[in-house]
Length: 196
Image 1 (tube, rainbow, N blue to C red):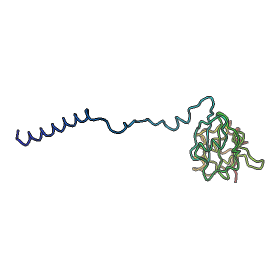
Image 2: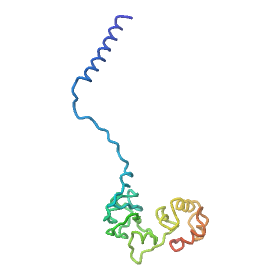
Image 3: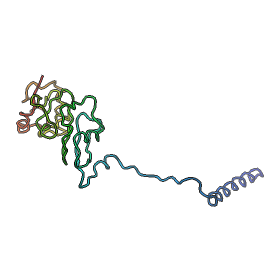
Image 4: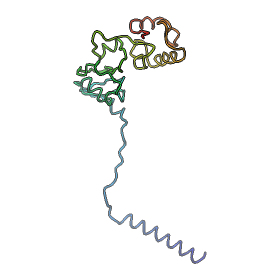
């Protein structure tokens, strides 16, 4: 081994030993960093106590989802928890001061959107002149899911059918949508319209 290699190995060994000595014998400076595991927002929002209620906020809000609120909360509190209403929301059609109850769905309608009877009885106070039918040719997925017997899959199927074949020309044309049979159609008749 050459002399310069011995010097280099000795120098590196000295640095290593010096570093170990400094590590163990120098006092700690500053505050130690503590790592905290973040809890996902959805987990914190769905934890319920006896003095709280869970509500599903949907429609024209910034962050639709399930929220845990105090048991004496009102519709306005649920909308605020969901990030507030969007610019397309029609807040004039909602009783913002109405108390909410556990398991309730708070639906914020879009401007110009008809509201179904089930939504009206759930959270929305409408004037008698407001339409109460869902237009199956223009309704979005949330509005379609408000209909009896229509969940996420059937709402998506209605929208896909509409996009493929154009607007429905009769209510009976819903029978052409996968998953909708005669009994589902009969349950929908009084809640839907083809609309203008």
